[in-house]
Length: 137
Image (cartoon, rainbow, N blue to C red; front, top):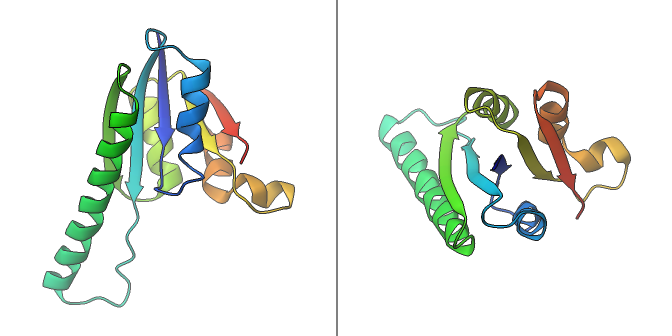
């Protein structure tokens, strides 16, 4: 059984990682974790009540997205995980703590090679202790 981490940012592009995993791993071959890193921008906000509201709204959107995606993976063993922080650092931290075999990410729509990988994906590729698959657009 492969332990697979799929970071999801809510974009249609990032959800292509799900399609890749579904096409390559049967239900009895994969233990999947869908992960979302909440990096809601709170700059220029000083009112604690507004900050709490922004964080809560952002977390509700993430929870709804992860639940919807988990439902698409019916029959697979799926867990969801969300955290606040820097996406690259949090993905690496989770992959090491939970000893994942594979991280599946989707490349950016940008044209040149380095930018097409994306800064978070590039960070994960450089720092990962496990295999990272970059799914094309």
